[in-house]
Amino acid sequence: MTADDSFGRLDDDDYPAYTMGRAAEMLGTTQGFLRAIGEARLITPLRSAGGHRRYSRYQLRIAARARELVDHGTPIEAACRIVILEDQLEEAQRINAEYRRAIHSAGPSLTGEDLHPPKRLRG
Image (cartoon, rainbow, N blue to C red; front, side, top):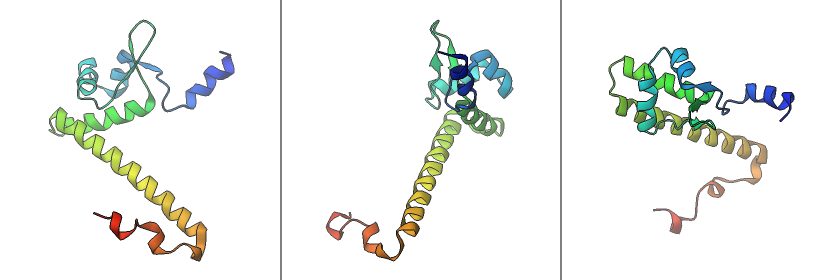
């Protein structure tokens, strides 16, 4: 790996750059909180060669949202579920926006029927 490869990772939201201690410090929380949201399967930190947990910027944003909910009185398990649902909703909205762009760029050749499965396939 070259130095250029390493610097390129600095912009990668999924690169596990932060140790558990640094992640907890950045979030203003405890390492126990990070372990708890890991046990709740909100985030799964990668492991270094030595077995230490490493977190990405994306995971830290997810953890920060969970912490915000917990700080407002939401039980940690419920906070984790809320964050998962919020993330799924955001992804669904992104996919819908892509479909809308595709429909718009296809122009009038695409009809509403093209967007739905045949009636026999609908529930």
